Image 1 (cartoon, rainbow over the protein chains, first blue to last red):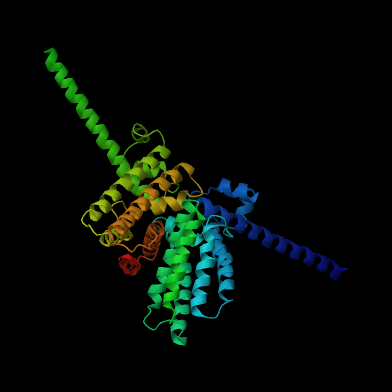
Image 2 (tube, each protein chain N blue to C red):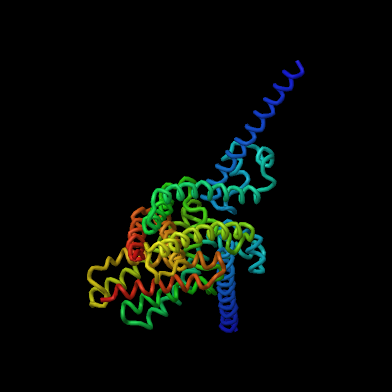
Length: 212
Length: 212
């Protein structure tokens, strides 16, 4: 009986932990969408309660503060988007094809993004550059990771002879990233998907010219 | 005596109107800087009171609501920046030189912008695209004016033979504008002026290729 009781207790505990994890994940998912559409300062605790269907205490059970939730929701959004982009890149071998796939995958956030509200890197960068140092640092790290990834693709391409030797990998990584982000901003503001197509076509031509 | 009294009364009235106008202008200037750094949702009435040195009533004397103030502060910021950019453009005649001057003047907002906080078009676009329809409409109009201006320079350039006949003026206006805005975002986030230089150099090369 003792063993049996223990076993049931363990099962309840496991179910409790599993349920807690699911709730935490649900909060992160809803919060990521809310912060990405309304912004960190624009989304209130009441908005978060309405979106999650939880009381304030239910949210604070999992996150110590709105700030902690915002930082983790940002990481969550970056992880979800990152997986999609990396998945698309992994389908290609040639550096020029990888860069082209990056533009398509990343630029798709101008339309229906997995986390509603467009690109969380862009949104958080703009909101936090002057107003939220901790979030700014988080966004800097995430963007530097993307820039390093792009730079790595170009550098490898130069090493394998797929990309011209005179190409400045760091500069091109920055040009590609900033052009996409500007395109996402304008497409979303003017509700016009054709703008992202125009900007992507421009980048496709530019990327082809980097090839050797 | 009656005339003299009237004359003094008129003078007081004039001084009162002038003082009111100065106060209104001061509120707009401080509010534009505050909204451009902290965002519309991030800047509170207390922040506005601290920045202007006025009580709430002193601000509401001139603006019916925080919303009205935000919309007028946006117009104020756009007017100040617009004057600088148009001033720089007017120094040039050739379409390619005008486009190059646009990149330099507009891109300078990555550093010390006349309205602190970077580009108000970019900041307001990101904050309001999903969260503030009235401001979104205001930003759309302002950005469309810039895009039409750029498109006009390119179209004129095609007409005068300064720009290649096969150039798509509307597409190029969008590419130039989005690339600059992306550059401003990344420069400000990473506190690195070199990024705006990299992006500008890329655009200078691209613009030279538009020339016939």
